[in-house]
Structures are given as structure tokens and as C-alpha cells.
Amino acid sequence: MAKKWRREYDPFTNLFYQHNMHTGADRVYTHNCKFLHDTGDPSSPVIRIDARVPSISDMFGVNETLRPLEHFKRILRDTLIDMRFDPGQIDEVLTARHVSFFEPLYAKWNETRDANWLYSMPEYVFETIHCLLHHTAKLGNARNGTPDQFSEAHNMIAALELLYSEYDRFSVLELGPGIGYLSLLVAHRFPNASVYVEELNPQSLQLLTTLRDLSDAGNLYVNCPFPTSFDVLMAFEVLEHIPSLHYSSVGEPMPWLDPYLCLLKHNAYFLYDSMWGAEWQLNHRVMGHFLRYKFDDFIYEKDPFSARTPFYKACEEALLLRGMHRVRSFDVQPCDVTGVTNITPTLRGGVKVYVKK
Image (tube, rainbow, N blue to C red; front, side, top):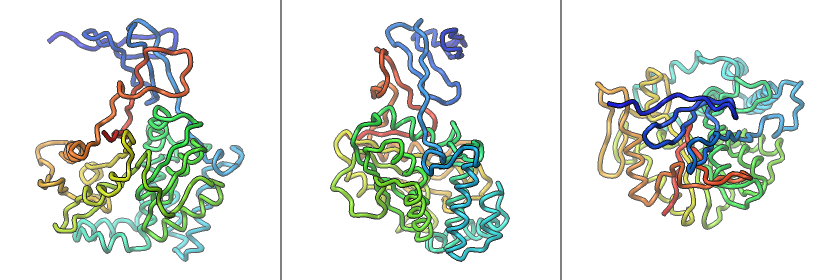
């Protein structure tokens, strides 16, 4: 078979990219940023557009010389102390990559798959914080507390910047936001947006409200009455945690998600990401994930001889049945790009974007 891709270099932007010798398209993977190229002229330079992701310094008014990430952790620690959690456990969650007191919780979850026990446990807020620091935002890699460029937080803002400008008025609902860090990013990056969150865990809610008040995010509404419709629905690391109401030890997110999808306007967007394969990727050292998931009429489980799970594709098929179509790079036009025409924006980096048709 003839070679399809050729690695090339663009001296105008100092970027390497893959050139498709069959179609003439250029594809750039460098640094997981947004890249545009002129679809009418394959020889045109690739244009890089960096996402403007708010940092902890931006959101909490902390001077970068004062180590903003440590300031953020101190807010979490003081609030958790007020909630009467064990100081030693708090410090371990905020500093350690691997948390020792999670081990018996992993074991109990693997044995019981009891969602009622897990989500009613006050200490579950520790798992939420740990996931944010080391996965969702990967905050440990930035001095000023900016999400890592390969994180869900960064890619979420990058995707929204392709759909909306800084000055647009639009409404957002985030489901299961945990302590609300992603919603804070959206509220600060898009000050004219109205951002609503729905979180059931009381400990996460207390932290979320504290962070909202300290960051002066007046356009972030916590567990308030909803508008009748939304422009954007978000659910990050949530769908894989929803248990089935009828099958033991099975996840079933769609009956829970359906009423929220109905709140989306026509041509509105659904953004989500889930670690469907975390049980195997992390050697079963996770909480709240299932080995089997039900989508509509079928229960899916991982093929033991395959490295991949079927859950992502099953979820995408279920969303399509509900009129939610995956947004590809050629479906959207970028905002805040001047002097550029005939361009193709890329939507890559883990965050899935769907539009309601």
C-alpha cells in the first residue's frame, strides 16, 4: 500500500506537520493546540491558535510570584479543615500522586460496586479533588496554576473558543462539576456567559461555593433554578459513574442524561469526556467505574483479548439516536481569527463535542 502521510516542516510557523499525499491536507499534532490551514491551498502555512485558558492567578487574583497553585491548595485545605476532615488525609490528597488511604476504598468498590455507599461517603470528595489535580486539569505541571495543555480543562476551553467568542452571551449547564473548577474556567473565560452547575455531593458543593465566592465569578450559579433551555451542556468524568437502576454492578448513563439533553436548544452543543477504560488502564485502582455498561437495549463489556473497550462507540451511537451529532473539524467556524479565510479548525484532544440536530 502506498504511503499516505509525509512528515513536513513549515518554516513560517516553525511547526512540523503530517501532509496527506492523497488529499493534500495538513495535520498538526504538536502541543495539542488548535491549528488551522487553508483548505484551498495545501501549500499555505499552518496557523497556530493558542487557547486562552484562565490560570489560578487570573481567577483568584494571586501574584504569580506567590505560587498560585499552593494558594489554591491552601483554600481547599482550610475549607476541608472547617468541614472536620482529617488533616493528614487532606495533606496526602493535596500532595501525593498515590493516596494510601484510597486502597481499601478501591478494594471495597471492586467487591461491591455499591454506588449508594460510594457517593454517600463524605470522603468521596477527596477522590474528586485528586482527579482534578492529576487528570482533569493536571495542575501540578504549572507554576501559575494553568491547566496542562494535554488536560481536559485546556481542551474544553479550546473547543468552546471555536464555538463562541469572548463577547458572546450563551448559557452553560455543567453536570457533576465536583468542586467546580471547570465551570470557574468557563465563567472567567467567557464573562458574558451564564454558567449553571448541578452537583449533589454536599462536600463538593461547599468547596464549589467557596471557590466561586473567592474568585468573584458572579456569572456562575450553583444549584439555582434552571432556565428552560441551554446553549451548552457539559459532563466531564461523569457518564461512566452513573449506575443502572435495574441491573446490579452495571453502569447506565443514558436514562440519567436524557432529561438534560432535552434542555438543549436546537443546534446547541454537548461536551463530554469519560475514561471508559479506566478500570483496565489503572489496574482497577479507581472508584465509581463499572466493568459493564448498558446503552439502550444492550449491555456491553470489554473483550478480554482487546486493548480497547466498546463503551465510547456505544455511547456515541446512543447519542446519535437522540439527535446528537459529533462535531468534526469541518463543522464549525472559529471565532476571534482575523485575516484568515478558507480555514479548517481542528477539534482534537479528548473532549468530544456534539451538536443537537
